Image (cartoon, rainbow, N blue to C red; front, side, top):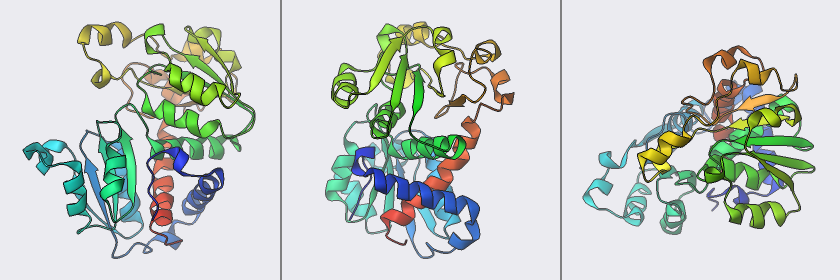
Length: 304
């Protein structure tokens, strides 16, 4: 049985197979309408979410399956002190596959150790977010036509941003990828990511503090919000939260085919005026997320 805890759980061939399946689902949705009939997805979200939870649920419903679960720890027996292990062993009696989000890093690994059904990590603390990574890869591949030969700018909270960490892990396996890491010093990519991922794989990268200075070099700009929930004091958050704001003037500095992605939700880091720019594809990205999660569910349930 296969779980998805990290993008590294998948080989590049397995990633490519999931992306190809997602593209087929987009083109021929009627082919997949009833393929999960009689199957149940449990969404166990110990941490709040809009897109990740609803896109998993939409994916299962689109496949003809059913959904159950909870949307916060307060709505589950975790509020009474039940362990993740016991919750998982219980939910395995009700469902065929689990999508789980948890604020503690490593919680999905614990879940996988006790689960008799596939576990999808839907985000664990500042660690990993593999289904968002698959969404990002599908978006880039569909809109750019490739996953290699790209200069990718990561902007914002690179220290706590689990979407950033997961996407870097995935992209380093493709040819001729260069990263431009744009952040204030306090929110730079952790040194273990620099050494164990980028340096280890001989990936070119530079660190920058000003977005304006590197806009013209980018094929992809991956914007992220400064995450209030990852800060230990509000003063630091307030000081950092508006460090980067992408607006129409900055977009004028970019290539005509540069694409702007964002895992959402956004706060102030992308001005609404940018939404009208055809290079801003973060809402298309949301739709791609449904297709890729449909493909992942089918793959983990071995229905394809």
